[in-house]
Length: 386
Image 1 (cartoon, rainbow, N blue to C red):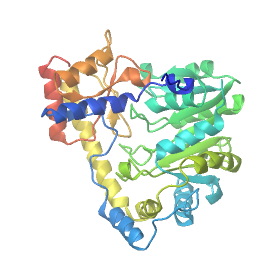
Image 2 (image 1 turned 90 degrees about the vertical axis):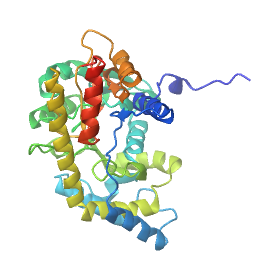
Image 3 (image 1 turned 30 degrees about the vertical axis):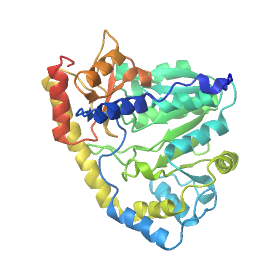
Image 4 (image 1 turned 45 degrees about the vertical axis):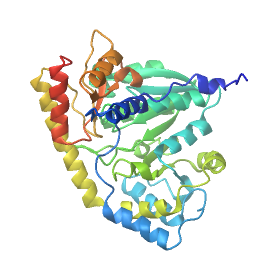
């Protein structure tokens, strides 16, 4: 039998980050000691109070379906959080709770993008944005920020040249994966001006909003004048609360968009897991201390790792948020080849920058202990990779 596959699937590549993680797992299964710096996952356990809340919810019988868009208690807690962030345009009817932030993004793309619609990405951009645009039938235009140490402000002229009245959607991720940059208010105001001029819907992916350093705070794009009704704000629980496997996210947007996206949501996942939603309430309301402890640990690791690279003469644009950095590893060569050598020879797992639209670089996660970060850099140096 010859099986035909949908063209929308065939034009999408597998996730590069998951491919590296799978390679690392294979080597570990062979008994190799791999320092895995490829994962976008905190290395902390989920705080105990969140786990206890989930257990209590299960014991209380919260194991069935919920209202499709989320339980009222969690949606109300999310409204309080959004209002605290200055996003006062959102109420419970503007929200959909999803099984993870990735599902939230998928639903937005499926709702907004039609065949041939243009999606603008700011490179380096998280790998799944491109895939989701293609799965929805969209086309891509990309703006490179590497020349500006991944900051957007210096690339605003390039963005202005890239977007037009034909641009349907722009994705902004600040603090960003894979670079850790936090976009300035001036940069976001530039985005606002272009979005208003060309009538562009903007996704503000704020999954790392609670993880910033040096007193920097990430501004929510939807708080800017003119962006209230054209911004879809996305966040989740995976990163700040170390709840990656729990799969809990959400997005907030204009009521008409939420109404349409609700069709995709209800016909695909039905609802997020009931007792996980109850755990989400606990995360939002009683976990600030644990979040701060994790943030401080990431800040210390960031400084430590930057220092290690500087000792070897490797410049790394200093991230202001998230838990990634992007050193330039192959300015005149092949970053994929460099990453292959890093994992094959040094047993250090990283992700090639070309997967994010920025060849010559590698994404390194510092969601790992200082001891393992030191070991990783020592191995890379030993094999002449830095």
